[in-house]
Image 1 (cartoon, rainbow, N blue to C red):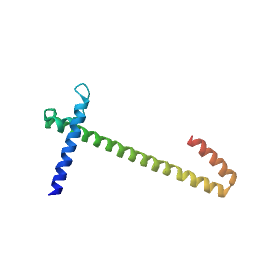
Image 2: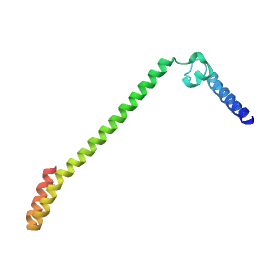
Image 3: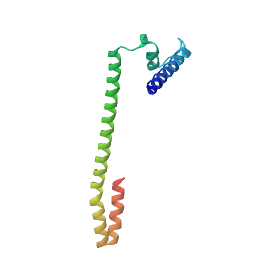
Image 4: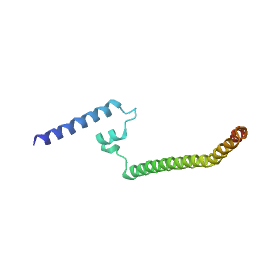
Length: 116
C-alpha cells in the first residue's frame, strides 16, 4: 500500500516539474514536444506524424549502418589486395638477395619506386 502511494507521489512530482518547465518557457519559446505533450494533451502529435518521424529515423539509422558496413568491407578488401600484391614482391626480393645481394638491393629499390 505504501509503495503505491510513493509511486503516485513520484508521478505527481514529475508531472509538476514538467508543468513548471512548460510554464517557465512561455508561449514565445520552443518547448520540447515530449514535455508539452505530457502537460497539455492538445499539443500531442498525431499518431501518423509520430510514426512518420520514427520511420524516417529508422530509415536514416539503417542507411548509416549500411554505409558503415560498406566502408568496412571496402577497407578489408583494400588491405587484402595490398597484402596479395606485396607478398610476391617481398618473396622475389628475398630470393634475389639470397642469390646475389646486389641484385636484391637493386630489386628492392625498383619495387620501392614501383610502389610510389
